[in-house]
Image (cartoon, rainbow, N blue to C red; front, side, top):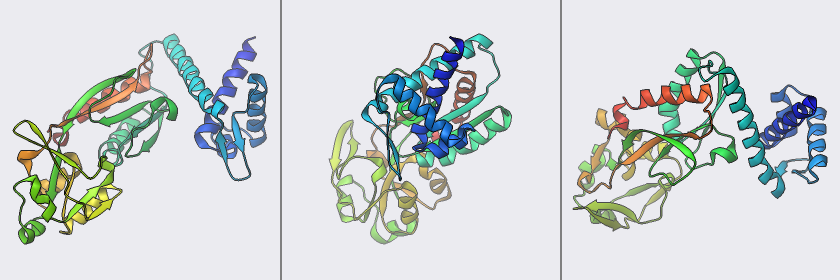
Length: 305
C-alpha cells in the first residue's frame, strides 16, 4: 500500500512537471528520468483515471480540458504533502526546496532579482524560479509560491503582506518640456506627444483626480508601447510625455533626467503587496523569503510614496 501511494504521488509530480514545461523531454531532464519513463508514467496515470490528460503531436504537448482541471487538483495535493512534511519536521525547519516567484517585469528586475540573489546566498538549500510578466497570473494554475502585486486586491484565499505604496505619475524629459511647455491641466495633454505604455492597462481614457473628484481625459496616444522600459527610454530622448508607476522612474527623477508633471492631479497611490498561498502551515522557505522581502521593501524609499 505504501509503495502504491509513493508511486501515485510520483506520478502526480511527473504530470505537473510535464504540464509546466509543456514537454516530455524537458520534464524528464529536470526530473532526472528517461523520456520513456516519463511517457510510461503519464500513460499509466491516464489509464488509472480513465481520461486523456495531454494532446500530443510531433511538435507540441498541451493539456486537455480534463488535464487542465486535474492540474489544479494535482498541485493542491502536492502542496498538502509538502505542508505535511513541514509539519512533521517542525515549523522551525531550515528553508529548503524550490521557490516559484512572480512579479511585474520591471519590479522583478529592480527589486526581486537582487534581493532573491541575497536570499539564496544565505540559504544554500533553496533554489528559485521566477516568472516576470506584466499581467496577473494565478498562483495555483502556474504552480507559484509568492507574487508581488500592485493595486487593490480582490478577495481571495491568498495571504497578503503590505510592503509599500506607489504613485501613477506623468513625466517627460526636461528638453521636451522646455520645447513644448509643461501642461498645467490634464485637458492640455491632447496638445502634447503622448507615449502610452500598454502594460498599465486600460483604454484610451486616463483617470486623474481634482479636488477629490475623478477626472477623465482622452489624450490620444501618438505611440503605444508594450513594455515599460521602452516607454521610459523614449521619454528620456525627449519624444513626449508618458505615465508609469513612480518606482519605475525614481532614479531618473532623482537625477533630473526626467521631470514629473501634473502632480496635483495624480490619482490615489496604490498599495504594493507580497502574496502567498494560504495553507495550514506555510513552508519554511516561503515564510523565510516573504519575511526577508518584506523587511527590505518596507525600507526602500521608492516604495514609500
